[in-house]
Image (tube, rainbow, N blue to C red; front, side, top):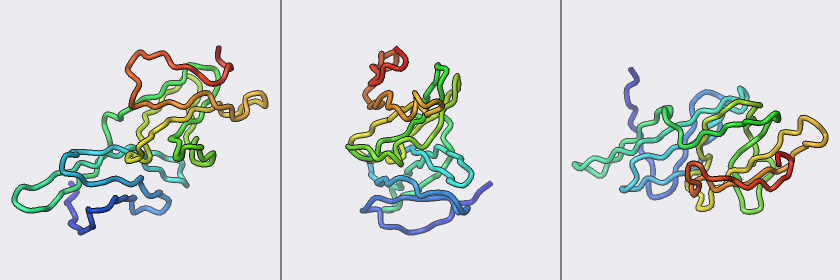
Length: 167
């Protein structure tokens, strides 16, 4: 059983975290708000190419102005991506309006595999998932298949691809 370790931080500004082990990147920024119970995001270990989806639970106390943050591995990620094609795909959160090519596609989804997904930067106003072909052949090299606003897509919605590779 892990015991809580108290620490103080300025909760008037966005905060971020990372695991102690060398190689983990910093999480995306998030705010502590009285009306927010939890926030879920991806955190990556760059050297091991390992991704963990973490939920930060915010528990406020009525007796004092203290917030307790509970970090746990997410059991039910907000999104699940499935690749039902013969091609490997790469995906990631677009971190700018124009799209930063380096950070857009940071995860690989192999043929007929699935992956859990959460936002890297949950506080961004415009959260967009970019999906590209993974360039296994010269004709497939890094073609953008689509940019999707997952928060606005209802289950069963037909998605329109930007590329004619699969049509």
